[in-house]
Image (cartoon, rainbow, N blue to C red; front, side, top):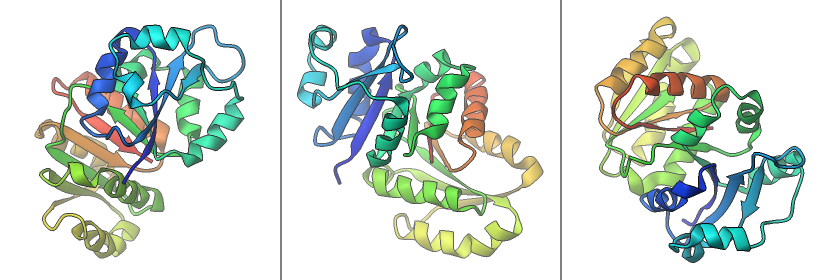
Length: 243
């Protein structure tokens, strides 16, 4: 399945490395749009947008080509937000998110984008363990569903973990979630954590894992903050996919 992906970047000097990292999880047949942050941008959308295609993006003189090529037509933030509904996902490398940490305007943009966000650690070339966070809400199940559609070939050899936040709705719907996951992966582990222990509990599971990816839905800003705070204390790479 071909995907339409938007990549947000800030440091053009590392752009080639970031493009190479994407190719561990995406195909040159996917549609890739590049959004480059502009410090002195005019208007309410702080990115300059490019639609160049993979062959150009993989060239050694990519930065020079960007400097000489025309960007996409300028549009308002509201228009870009509207068009994000037609993307499969936005990809953000963790070093970019670290650079914008605490900047409310950037965080609001991430909160408003109408498609999943793949917060990617460029040091990961595979996911050895995948953690589905399920709390009984439609948003948390949608994150599982979106991920399995978009990344199915990339977790065939991964250890899959369903982490359930114990509440009446999550427990009532557990069997439905099991049935869905088993369509894509027959064997997976299950952990149940009470609400007051959930955040620390899932972090303990991550501490014991190698090359993990966390999938969650809803409360996007809170999940991003928690994951970045956890990453500050983690020596090994980890990534997040959220809806």
